[in-house]
Length: 334
Ligand SMILES: Nc1nc2c(c(=O)[nH]1)N[C@H]1C(S)=C(S)[C@@H](COP(=O)(O)O)O[C@H]1N2
Ligand SMILES: [Mo]
Image (cartoon, rainbow, N blue to C red; front, side, top):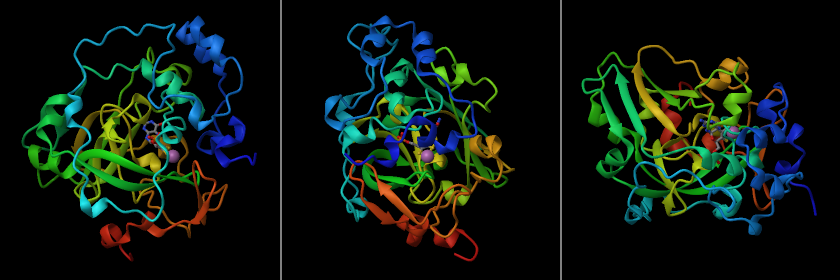
């Protein structure tokens, strides 16, 4: 079988982290103290789409502590498909492929391992703090927030800076709906978004205490209120599994995937451009803008083409990932 880009051994397959120390999978297993995991996973995993369930779930031999409040009503899903985002130029990525190749450095640098670790995260109860330069700062219970917001489904292309791409049905609501609810002041110029910090649950945070946790990202107000900018609560017609960033993650499809921050706990309106996780780790390589652009290579690889994960097909990379009609006007010189 031809090797896919994402099946290259870990040391080559995570270029966002090639400059970082390699971490041992066994160390993560040790952190979990999970004998049940060792039996199934003590070998180098080559992912085969049909062999495993899509959701992050503990092995049968491990009992996860019950969460202290129930998950939201499954009746929210699937949400109404927005006809404006119901067509793509490529088939949807198989759910089992998307659910087993994840970038979520809080858990692991190895894409194929994230789903085996992320189930540790307790996503209920979950609060999202909206703060900073707003008239109505609020601490939302995530389910109360989700019930209040207009959920819809959209099919989006998704392009990682590592030159692979997916096509994903997200469920969520426009970030603009939340922004309107909190009434930003005219002094707010950027939106700063932060993920959780919990090294007890996230082995990647435990193993890499020197990294700039929590994972943070940012958008200009114009980007944050753009029609495309989604806060996702679900994927493939159900709520988000942990490895995709439950209970709430950003999706900005014209930008490289690292902007689409997962498992958000804080949204702050600020005056200055906020520091971001990848730009802090490697200044100048993963910049604040991160707009998909085939003409600007990564220092270590071309961005000319992308591989559709799950199929091996290569396609030309599209400027703004094909979303120029929505966003090109935001950037001087288009
Ligand atoms: N908190 C957090 N968010 C994150 C990341 C991460 O490591 N931590 N990785 C980013 C990167 S590089 C990509 S490509 C996407 C991957 O999303 P997916 O696993 O749902 O496909 O999540 C982004 N959001
Ligand atoms: Mo990425």
